[in-house]
Length: 121
Image 1 (cartoon, rainbow, N blue to C red):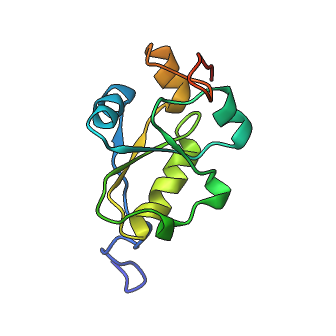
Image 2: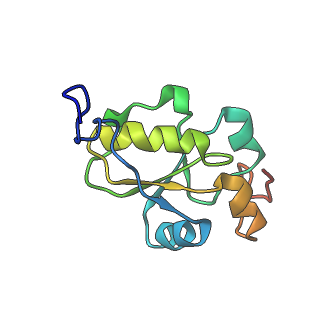
């Protein structure tokens, strides 16, 4: 092995755990924050009951309490993965919900529009 190669892996963003929609729903029922980072129109169409909406472009880790668990949510799991990485780097206890709201709705979990009526993803 040459001196140019190192056995130490490169340091990147912290690895963020992922959970499925059923575990996310159980955590939400226990009071864990579901943080929906989708755009306004997506949120208005439908979201998980009790979720908090902060579009990814507006996410400020300092606006969320450190030490309280967070489940990051988006449409498919991509943007929430990015949000999770940013939040974890800032010291938050965060997991990413795989499959996003598409998987949530497909699993038959509730989706509501503002005002509490039925929503869609």
